[in-house]
Image 1 (cartoon, one colour):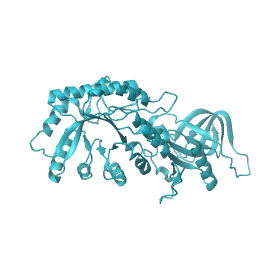
Image 2 (cartoon, rainbow, N blue to C red):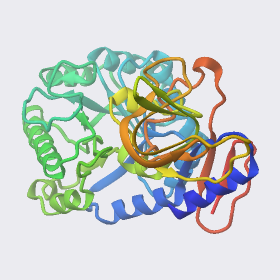
Image 3 (tube, one colour):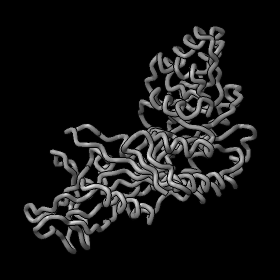
Image 4 (cartoon, one colour):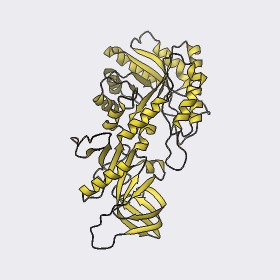
Length: 414
């Protein structure tokens, strides 16, 4: 946090414009992932789902650490291939178009998650036509009520993701047709939920996956090389305890079901859990006003830069950084020991990032530093709504300063 505050002070001294920036702690991400990897069981591998944050510098930092990357579009695949032509890639997501399937093969993705019977049929035709071989994992939507309950569930209920488990036999029949010479079954993919905070329940869910796969192996005579258990490791944005990674990996390491996997590899593809805690959205307060007895702090920025709180309907955690610059001849607006609603600069009442929160002291010109803004904040936002300028982007690195990149809004700090 000291390096973040140092950076904001330096930026504050270099410009007269209100501060509005994303700050990504690349060294923090590197250290966090290294710690995650140090406790993983032997036969498990970690992929990064870049949908959480596809920033090229983050991909570069993770490249020597993770097994590979999970993508859900050709745009995401291209981002990874800009960094590495050879790193393993998992390609998922519903509704893949022909050009996406063709690109997945031409860019040598390691595994394609087949989401439907139609997708499988198309892939077989396109692979044979292009004379490209490709490995597939069947994404399965389990019919079960035993999955952990979270705010975002993609399995155990009607869903556009994957195929129902009753269709496994038909999918395998399609793959075993003599016309199929280039699409090869390698295993199963599950991604049943998002943002689960309970490590014990996550292990139970993985046990459930393994039991299902064991049953299918015997039922259909399968050689399963990969079980992709997806991501879904939770990040808490309030006082709730977050996901306990060390407990999770300890339980996995001692699990007889995991130990019985033999040469079957177990994949995880987290996104949010990798980067959320290492991103910050800094926005300067430009006005403080009262309306019908309620206090509002208006920031330079808002949900067009950080849509997550509006999307999830939560109050985003923050801290206040007091800055001393005040160049006007009149008194600086300030609120003390009072409830404040933090809003953005958009012409919509939905542009709120934290409602009715007690602050000890907040002045116009101070910076509100929104924590846990490394995942699903900038990239899911409607950046160009009303045409406000984009935030700047800064990166905390280890060692010497890397200097300014070709992008004038991209700067590195150590």
